[in-house]
Image 1 (cartoon, rainbow, N blue to C red):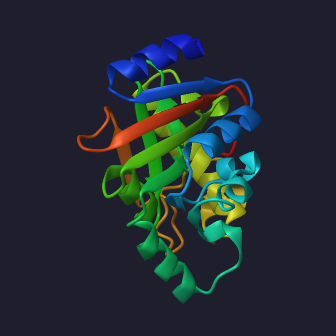
Image 2 (image 1 turned 180 degrees about the vertical axis):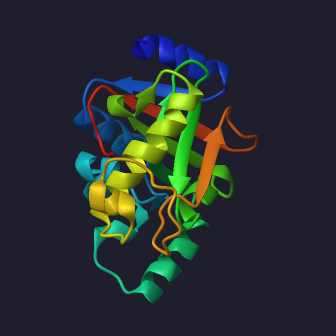
Image 3 (image 1 turned 120 degrees about the vertical axis):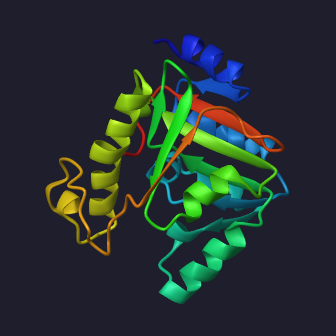
Length: 203
């Protein structure tokens, strides 16, 4: 499905939508519209690949755990502070093209919690590799492609991280897919903008 058609579906779900050919163009857009704000960035390889943090932190107060190595105590404090920012930025694990639903999996819950409540505006970054034809395959992608690769990148001790091939529905304490969130439509009282990017980004 073309980006134009996907954008139409998303707009019917009350999401704002912007389409970009490259990650650099998308990063420049976000850098221009987010200014003088408190910003939290959810754990996202897409954000890192876009080089977004160095741009935004020059003129915003930005919380991003991946920006540097932190102790568990420091990370926990940062996640709590991130819940109160004006802006939240995250990627998605999958987007169902047919109904315009966003799918995210989380191990701790801080990322999916921030996509649901507490911020003036949430930006969702979506590379073309995150697109799936329908919700069933979007959830499959989140569990069997995104989660294993993310667990491996984070050094988790899980079967999926060792093989990076599929979800094993494990019971490991390091399990990265304890919660799954589906956004069918924009939530009330929160602006939500989806940034579609015609490049493969993240997992």
